[in-house]
Amino acid sequence: MNILADIRDLFFPRTCVCCGKLLSSQEEGLCISCMASLPMTGILNAPGNEVERRFWGIYPIERATALYYYARGGLVSNILHGMKYRGRKLLCRQMGRIIGTELLGSGFFEGIDFILPVPLHKNRQRDRGYNQSELLARGISEITSIPVVTDVMRRIHNNATQTHKSAFERWDNAEGLFDVTERAHSLSGRHVLLIDDVLTTGATISACLDALKTVDYVKISVLTLAWAKS
Ligand SMILES: [Zn+2]
Image (cartoon, rainbow, N blue to C red):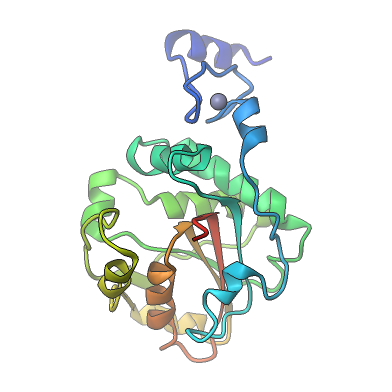
């Protein structure tokens, strides 16, 4: 199909992030059969859905949704692991384009002015070389043409990896995790979409909401690639 892609694959064979199978030149990140097996939530833009209800009583968000269910050891956990720890930057953007494409016809993006990826702490971003949520956001932006904004919110604490902590400890650990910069006033009266790779307890997103609520009349929606439904 594409000779350059074929030559690239000959010298640098690419494998599916989920099953490890060699990818064909037409496949990106994951193979067609893993792609077809991903567990979709089917929530799309349903008002009052379970993801949205997570934030009721915390902040009056406009909308919230997640594309896939996350399960430990499942296909989606392989994708998240590849995005975060294996440097699969193209995969991050590809997943963003998939989110954008899946939700485009649902009305979920209507009225949204800016896309805000959940920031990494600057030390973490320096070590990793990128922010997976920002690349997701850029993939979504490619489909929706909604601009990505990265200079309005900062992660002020570099909290250690949270995987071994209980849900309660994780929640506690997220308090005061972010603040907003002086540029955040430009969000006043606008509708912003917060993007993260995975929603677990909701503590990280809630900490973002906490920081953003200092902006006057900002409207906020939430979108994650995956949701660890408990
Ligand atoms: Zn596969």
